Amino acid sequence: MKKSSLTILGCHSSIPTNKFHPTSQVLEMKGFFFLIDCGEGTQVQLRKAKIKFNKIIHIFISHLHGDHFFGLIGLLSTFHLLGREKSVSIYAPKGLKEIIDVHFKWSYTKLKYCIDHIELSSKKLEKIMENEKIEIFSIPLKHRIYANGFLFREKPSNRKLNIKEIKKIPDIQIGDYPNLKLGKDFKTNNGRVIPNFQLTFDPPKILSYAFCSDTSFYLPIIEYIKYVDLLYHESTFLKTEENRAMKTGHSTANQAAYIAKRAKVKKLLLGHYSNRFPNIKEFEKEAKEIFFNVEASEPLKTYYL
Image (cartoon, rainbow, N blue to C red):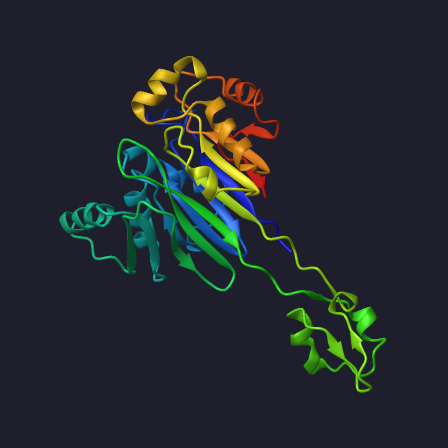
């Protein structure tokens, strides 16, 4: 089974350069590809990462600052030029639909595919998408404008059949398999009850990923992201710039680490670095003073949950 993974396309803030790329990433989970934020140059980074455009059906935009969505119209235009027919769902704060509609109106472009806009406005944890394998929630953040993080969580899988043990019980027929996968015990023809754990294996562990950018140091999110396998939390500044972080609605590396520690997450990824700090390992070093399993995310690097 393919592992769930996160590919970082860009992890810097504000101004793109030849080395620094604004926020964008792709989460692959249970066979689905989710594009999270779409800073300028995202489609070029997608090509470098060898992620096929037609795999992207769901796009999540955290907020309407340009470094988190300026690449979106270009990407949507490229979808059109490539002859895409499959629809795209965009989960974003209210206002993005208007921005996109105005662009395509005045460029006289009639897209070959449909866009389903899911406008976000809740300031509470809210389930915004669900299918048979995954559920996705918006996480309220604290920034200069309305902003959301996102929580992606797998749904429980069925138990796996232990065929070797099953074959030892002649009464078990193929028609009994669905109930065994659901965790039900088996009752033989003579009335003996065989516990399910003797006939099946535990399902794979449920995995979860939380994306929290952009946000000030905001303790309420701890409750929403407890025990996630991977947390991406912005760390725009080092602690020497804590006052600047507070004024601009951002966090420092040690603040991100504190959130991770309190939430008891498995691993922390830092990102959204200010360009004033060229050495991203400084962020990692600072965060490790508080939380041990932390890494400074890098463009075009893939991390496994």
